[in-house]
Image 1 (cartoon, helix red, strand yellow):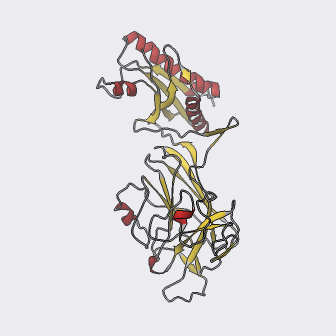
Image 2: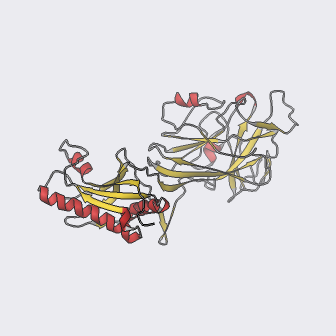
Length: 369
């Protein structure tokens, strides 16, 4: 019998992002391409030219986001530029955009991610922001959305939730960065961050203020000369999105990914071990949970053989978790052969789905604490 790769996902599919490996040390890579704006096609000479100058980055609306770099000899240089003076947070470049302006004018910035987010996995979005010196006031409203495809919206105004619902690509709801005050520091960089759980379609990141002027918390410094209202212009730098791990839920069924089987063998490849390490780490952080492992086969082969094979698959996974350090009383394993198929249509695709190892986390009480 040919035994195929198994999938790590809940029944609605959850997989883990691969961690970047360097010199044998595993760490989460930044999924935002060119997050510090160091990569560029052209040294900035003209304002509103981010789309052509900075690699990967673009403006999703008619708002004219700017790109600044130390290489520029124009008003788009660093540290001095047309909006004041600011050293980069990291490297030699950053972006600039209006988060508040008269008539609800807004500027946004978008970038493709290195990987599409995995459904059920947790991520952390972090960026650094600084208010430009030549700003009339400060805001405390900065948000982000994720989209399936790049946005191209013919407007200079703010992108409300209603506008986003009308576009031809799927987007997440707007999520605001939490803050305790206005982004009003014109010298230092302020860190903004929030965590999200992937829905499985997010391949683009869009940043900006998605609120109207009326809905934005705006602090006027008292020297606005425009009767229509003031301006808040901000620099952005060092934007990152990193993988935190799966967001496992009690009593949900998950299927192990990257568990590769050869004939009469159970071979855990590096990707499979990382998947199991994610499970182990989650259980270590949640000592009130135990895990039940179940092995399954397709309908090919005898019932006796499939029962044994499914049991061996489940036991091997359980033993690996125990080898990582998980207490054996927090693990159970059982083989079900081909008795519980995910798909009973008897096609090759159905059989691939049915050859799997599943796990369920449940509440656990230690009888001998």
